[in-house]
Length: 595
Image 1 (tube, rainbow, N blue to C red):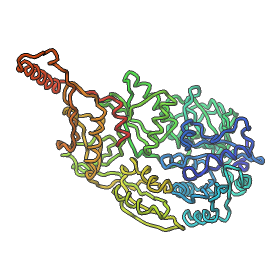
Image 2: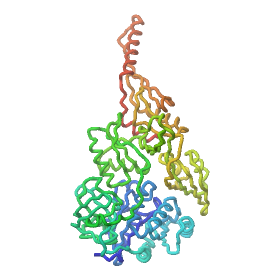
Image 3: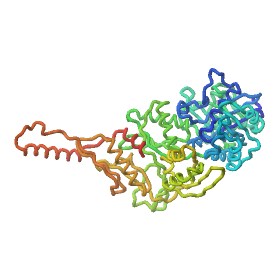
Image 4: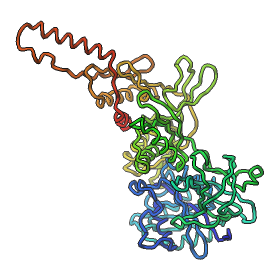
């Protein structure tokens, strides 16, 4: 049983690409946790997708031994779409290393993650990274941390995660400055579920932080939120490879398995207690509830393999608590799921993980954001699927979600970024010159404008230097319309989408042109229309294939040829009325890329 005074629990938080995973590699080396033969870059990034993209997607925890202490390190993502992983990690920590790139200074996610750590009650250690680079500026970076983040830099550290310079001093600082866990092994068990993943042998594996008491193999435990009792059949920790141990005591971070087979058997943020105290214990205050910001339909190419898609999504949702699933059916695509995500990158990562980890290649419909609808009877409903919008006669107003966006940018790019925000229907809240050549802009923008191409355009306009973070501020009344797509007067429900009226023609024209480009030609004319209610705002005609019915006519009376052509024309009219146009599922992928 480990004395809690010898434990330090901390996270590394930073903006994307400021060197979190590289610093974690140096910790592993200096604590001799990994031999040189097994060491590799981004060691804690276990997903192949993380290595290819150079970003952390899943937070990872590892226990390190250093000078008789146990350091429980949780490496967190930096991209705005995965901020929920950061809040989840901080709930299990007493301290956080606020890592800032010495060449770039404080960025949007630096500030956002720092506020998450302060809200979680973590002790923050400012750490300036990449001091080995020739254009690093430690003094300026510390000044930005003090001025922008608003925390003391009196006890700060300057390191190079790449070379290892200053990392020894940082490890000693962690022991000295980050407080130990306050729990007691004498108290009844109390633990928080901070992550989970699916194992084909153990079922649902839960990563937990023990706050009080001791949890051992064979114990009967209760989940307060799920209101169920289970027996623990496996206890382990990562140091840094998974290893089975006999028990986890107060202050420790490890993982357990207890025969949980269904994805709905566990909820991240749930409190674990001894079964006899299940009705006598208040749950631990976990982290903020995650609410999806983007929705998309996931379908299988072959409806016979629908169960494979269902199983893969359910297992993936256990590993990623931010994904929500709701079964739906489409006339065009068959059975599928309406899935909720935190952003387009999150949606894209999920699709790639389905392909790599489960061998399922889903067809994904156009992403959309949730809207609130005020009805004439006074009720307010939230719709996640555009096809669920009530009839226009029942509506009073449609409200779309808005977000508060904070943009950090060098001064020379401000003009272009202001134009971008105006184009995206933004309203400026503040304009601050916080440091030499650094501007912070705050805008209110519709979420629908953020989740499409805002990030890409911002990076392009600023040559990669600008960064942004956003927080939801609620729903606002907006002139939003639903655009329906019809092919030969037959509606294709999977292609419906909601858009602001001012941009309806652009989106409709783009969608119609994409369909015309990718739908296969038929023996009859295909009419593609994008409509708002009964009004057509964009249309295109796909010319029919023509069979040469007069090929066998050699000379003779011209009326014979005309009769054959008239007969063909009548046949094409009947085909247009009776024939159906199959929209290939690959067309939906093309639409997703172009909208």
